[in-house]
Image (cartoon, rainbow, N blue to C red; front, side):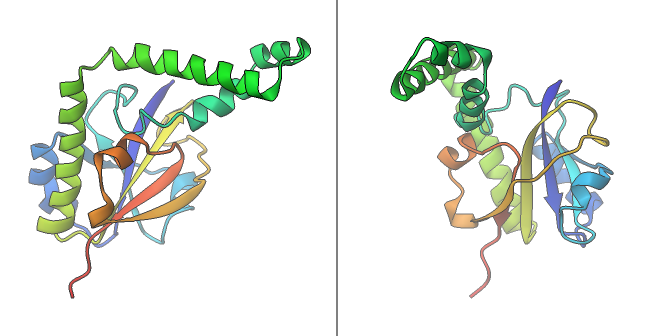
Length: 190
């Protein structure tokens, strides 16, 4: 079906008060009632659809992370065929890397470097604005390939990774891993 970027926010956040920020950065942040996902979050954590896009298949978030694609290709029929042909593990590894590199190059042609830069800047500015100006304690982002709808998709969150405010970089956002909940954390006052 499609990739979607979903989000989490602390339950005390008033979404109406943040509407102007969401609109400024072209975000949606509308609630999703997915019982499966909510059961893996903090009690009463808000679970939300992050963007206004029809889907997030063309997002740059996680676009440079190839671990999922590598695992998928490693289990493919083509690899079984190559193993039958007595290919070494190194040859198989190199074949997979070439295949992923070729696919990434084709996908990269869909967006110009300027468009990629603009989208990453928008995400960076959005996160910084909510964490600093709106005084939100944490914002979670989750990228998942959906086979069913947003409400009934069964997702297993592999892990939750806390990212401090000062660690938010374009490289980090470009390398987000699927099914990992990234919680971007505000800098505590000292």
